[in-house]
Image 1: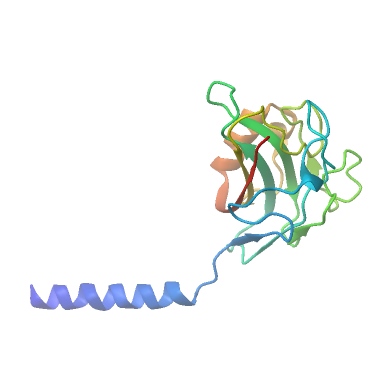
Image 2: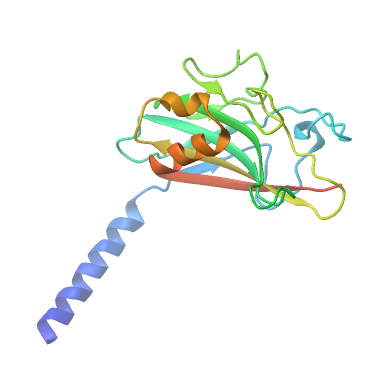
Length: 185
């Protein structure tokens, strides 16, 4: 018993030391601060909102081995849609060597996206970034998430609905990293 306990503790210490040296997959933005209010530059410009509707700059580091592509999704889980939330941006098929999206990459033209990447239709009905614009009341959370995927292309899911894309992305995710911003009016 004593020997197996000492082996267990030795293994646990080795695992903890190894985990301490590993880098974590991380998402950063100079435009979105964790738990802070999203600037009007990034707020939608319709439905009663008068923002700049400019997608924020995002960058990520240390994806896991085996990453073949990335996807970036922006979701408002607080939208009064009966539990489905609201999808504000979906960018898929981002090549595995890319580590950032520049500010404004969510423009409908797609010209600022990395080669091969494309935007899926949001719940606004547009293939572009759609910034925050909740109904008046309590501020909503806007979760910006980058997914490291074990597939290089989303395939048929890229032409489907947000739920199908989300299902495919989550089913093929090696890791994900998020930043949550807030906005209310």
